[in-house]
Image (cartoon, rainbow, N blue to C red; front, side, top):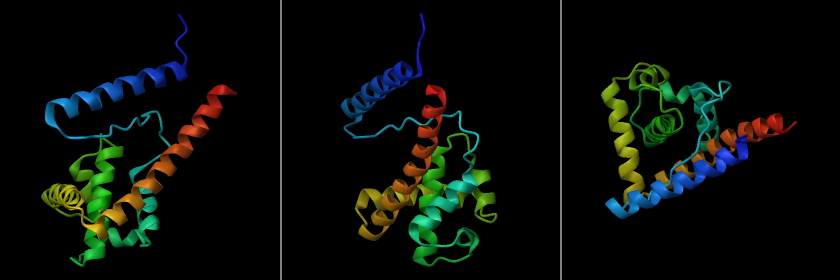
Length: 153
């Protein structure tokens, strides 16, 4: 039996929806699971950091700035959270290297604080996060579309 890529994607979507529903039923939490192909070797965490910084209107060098100013902190929180979501294999140490050598506990704190700020509905942070997430999704989708057109050719 030939199992085509569109069939595989459709099956994966079905499994994802079922898993989202199970999580909702068991925990009461609404989650969105994202299908992210792992075949992409052309996408790197460094590129994602550029996409996030551009989306928020900051320079990529701001990740390494040793400052507790809100804009710099928000940028690092958002980036750490999205890196862990889109690059599941990335380690806390890898993220600390990207951020200029912070301690891994700072990254853990940043990911936790990002989740808390989103859950609390912090308007300023949520707007930045959603803007960055949309840009990252476009960046990922561009490759998925390129892959789809390549396999259909």
